Length: 125
Image (cartoon, rainbow, N blue to C red; front, side, top):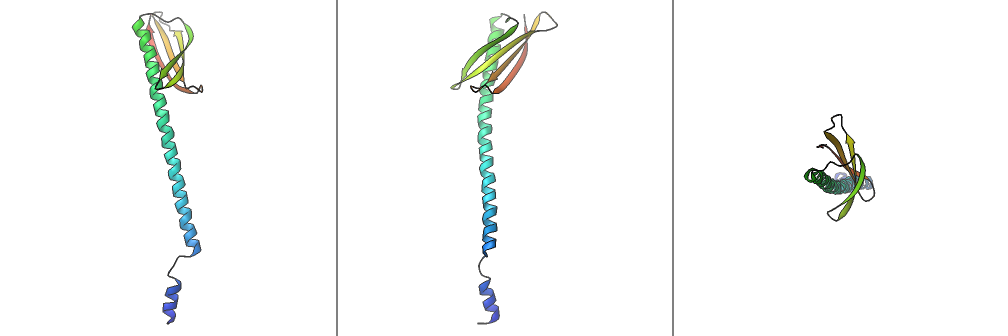
């Protein structure tokens, strides 16, 4: 065997360092992919919670408008079942400089009392 052939035969495979570097790169890439997938799942759940809470808040404000009654100045609590969850709501009614209108703020939280959404509007007395 010539010296050239024996050198080529010894260089035919990967060294242990090259294999470890390749495995490290693959592990980092897979870890980043799993983290991104977890973030997408969390964002999807957050979007569903915000959408359902917005429906609750808009329903509460629409009920006030349709009733034709002006809510009393002050704070009140309510609950709203939507999509199998019960959202905890707080409604704050405040006067405005114009006595014919009131500010109404509806805040919704999840069952763990974490704030989700806040909607504000002005209603006519």
